[in-house]
Amino acid sequence: VAGLESEATQLALVDRWAGTGVLLNEVRGCYKELVATESALKQAGDWTPEQQERLTQLVEDVNSMNLEPGEDEELRLTLKRLDAERAAVEGCARVHGIVSGNNGQSVTDNLRAASRELSALQLKTQGSTISSDSESTVGADDATNLDVATDLLLEAQRLVQ
Image (tube, rainbow, N blue to C red):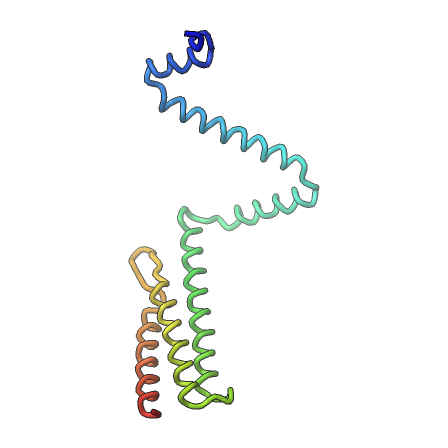
């Protein structure tokens, strides 16, 4: 067979016979990483002195924080929780603006709009589950408060109609 004369074919047959296919794939993956790293290093060499200084400063800043293992993830979770709380506060401000009735709409329209806004807030609050040392839901008390507020708005709508 003419294909057997090829060095690549011979190596493939030897690898198959020796059962080194998994190792061969690992080596190929490592080689791809090496090529990517070399490319990144070459690009890093093209950085301006200002970019290199900025990167050095960022690395020093991160190192000076003396983060414990896992602390960065804890900080990400805290940031996510704070973002969810900020969104809830903004939503409540929108509901307050609607309920205050300074928008020229009827009371019924305002109650409907406020109800829709509270429903949207409930969905966001219910979807903001964050794990830390123990499972906890961001804004669990807020979710209960939103349920009560929604119930009150629905009751107000029923009374107005």
